[in-house]
Every structure is written in C-alpha cells, then in structure tokens.
Figure (cartoon, rainbow over the protein chains, first blue to last red):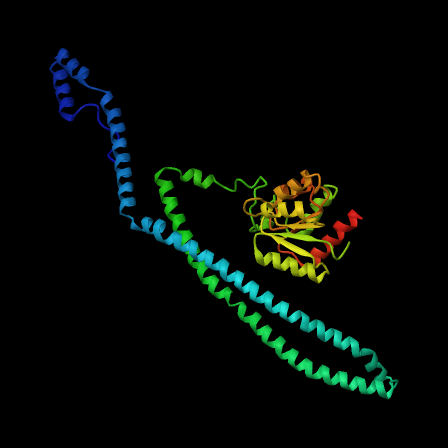
Length: 248
Length: 127
C-alpha cells in the first residue's frame, strides 16, 4: 500500500510561498495558502484503500477460478468419499453378520457338549466312588464312546468357526485405509474453507465458533471425548445416577 | 416376567437388532419381532399385542423418542414398557426420555449384563 501521509502542498508551491513572503507579496502568498485543498489527501487515502481491497478481491476471485482442486473436490472427491464411507458401512455390516452367523453356529455345539457332560456326570461319579452297577457301567462306556466321537467333530467345527470369526476382522484394516483417505479429504476441504472465510474476513468468527448446538435433544450419535463435556453422561453408571436423581 | 412375552426390537441397524435379539434369546425371550424405525414400529404395536419394546433413539423417519411419546399418547398402548438402548448420551436427552415416560435407558456400548439388569428392573417395578 502507498504511504497514506501525503503533503498538503507541493515543494514548488512551498518555495513560491516563501519567495512571496520574503518579497512581502502578502496577497500572492495568501492565494497560495488558499489554493491548498486539504480534503484531497483524506479522499486519496480512502480511494487507495478501496483500490487495494478491489485488487485483493480480484486476486482472490482469480485464484479461486484458477484453483481446479475446488472443482475436483466438489465434483469428484466428495462423491468418492461418500462411496467410500458407504463401503465402510457395508464391510462392517458384513463382518458383524459373519461373526454372528459363526456364533449362532457355535452356541448349539457348546450347549450340546454341556448337556452331554451333565448327562453322564452321575454315572461317572458313581464309577469314581466304586458305586456303579455293571449295566450302568456298560451304558456309561457307550455314552463316553459317543461323546468322544462327537466331541472331536465338534472341536474341529468350533476351530473352523473361530478361524472364520478371526478372518471376519480383516475389515478393520480395509475400512481403516478407506477412512484415512476420507480424513485427508476432510482436512483439505477444511483448509480451503478457512481460506474462503479469511478472504471474507470471517476468521474472527471462525475462532469464536466453539461448541454450539449441544444444548438440545437432537440426536448426536456416539459422543467423542465424553469425559471433557459437561452436558453428556459418561457410561451407564452416569445414566443410572441421573435417572435416580430424577426419582427413577 | 413371562418368558413367552412378545417383544418388538426397533433399530435402524440390522446388526444391532440381531445382537439384541440374540441377547434376549440367551435370557430366554424368543418371541421377538423387529422394526427398523418408529414409523414401521407403531402400526405393528397397534395391531400386535406386544408386551415390551426395546428401541433405539436416532432412526430415520420416526425417532425412538417420538415413538415413545406416541405410545404414551395411545390409550391402548400407554402402559407398554419401553426400554431405550441408544448411543444418545446427553443429559437433556435422558431427562427428556424420563419425562416422556421411558421405563429404562441403556447407553451404547452396553453389555449383556446391563441388558439383563435393566430388564429385571423394569419388570420388578411393574410387578
């Protein structure tokens, strides 16, 4: 920006003024003084400032025009991010269902093992205390034979299902990579928005926009950093305390 | 509480419905039905003779809190016990749910033990 302090008169005017005064030409000297336009300088400052703002705005608009990233962001990267996040939902849904399928398969196997063992326990205890009839002993042997055969198959089944559950967790790696890409994009969009707001001289408001809108009953989903917030509960114990304080 | 009581599980995520269904089954409640939001749940409740509702809060179309209010407004349904199982954890929300007449409030993530404890408590109060 140019120096805003401008002289009210030029050097040649000043020299002429001194010359008139030395020659005692008072009328001429007064004319020079009267010809000085004091308003010009303040107008000039305003004009210069407007000129500077116009240039800034022009440059900012040009830089947005030339910034093809903005177009890519809106037209390509954001829709792409949406697809990625949908994919994350799909993957996690699939993993959860694979895991629950395996659990549903395993629970009856575990139940059968428990029931079989409970069924032979009285006979087995009889045997251990030498208090078992020969007929019962024979039946116990046959039951044990069945349990051994069945347990082996069950154990192999359980093992396979546990491996399935293990493999279902690989979504964590894949979705993690997807989410990292989206985080990068969000950061880029954030920095672009900050630039736009700065050009619009809204950066002060940006600094002031701390957490708002938390004080209502609109759903917010899982709470991040619940321990740092006063308006949310931190776990079931807090919920129970709050409800009992309400007379629940 | 009767083990054959008819339970409606309302949640927009099928995996969460399945988890709750499985946990209820482990507790002996096998007569369970599912709805994916309040808007689907309400007509089921009106025509279905349900004994108990487990609902999420944040769902599309009709949220759990609105479903709860609709249930309390309906002369046929107003005594139906409602347990809320939700990630919503703002104090104001819990107060709102309590004032709307919720019978229990569980915040996600939750455990099988918490679900059992709250169920027992709900039915103990109802006698």
